View 1: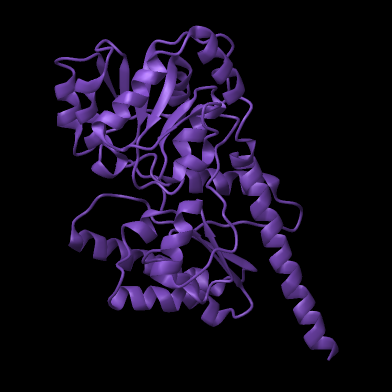
View 2: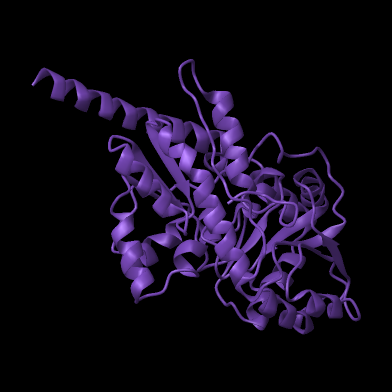
Length: 351
């Protein structure tokens, strides 16, 4: 998956990882990337774009790679397995991003059986968040080798001295029920402060419902934003509100934290692992309209001194989730796999 004109930020983390890996590569190390741009299409259009992707993949079969790293366990994953048929010594890595396990994979049936069989071909299985461990075992009978998020670029997301807070709660992401937008919309009547300032970034099927809020509440719809524009909004916001039900990690949470903006997240989503409750954000248990509203009311009641203390601590956390740390971990993993392969070849030759 890769950004497109239609979806300019879909899979942007893959692009960011590739760019940084090429910068970090030592002499003799080389990276290539094969991708399919993410676009919304009909069922027939989807068949066509996957067929075209496999046709474009044919020349790759004639190139020799030591490591092939697949992002997202979808229809393109068998291409990696096909590649190893021609290059048995190549190591295969698979990063699971959440939707590929939680949303796209059924519990039973032919697709499940195929995916259970295919995943055994990978040398390393890397979910982006701890919340994927249980469905990975339950649906695919597999265990993770390492948990590693996609990474947030600290060169893009960083703090600003004395930012002016013009927004109380910033909401970033697609306007979908899985993002918790339906429950959040129903939470507005339970807010104590009807003038609390909200800003929604993104678009999606629930946009009409979000716009309806503007009639009675202080709600701004900002549309889609570039990463630089998003950084400006983080600086202007007191809190990032992330009530998602389905994200395995939720990169926007650490983006906000790198900008010094505490986050409010659900206790049972993947984002909870990024939050130290009461220190760099808040974790709420009750994922109902009243439960969300009560958490927002509590945050609105914080004194300026209490908020400043939390915001100051926030900016010093989550360094382990930076893009730089993630790419260095990947590089070490690739190099170790290549070293193991070289040792195996030496053993075969000597014996």
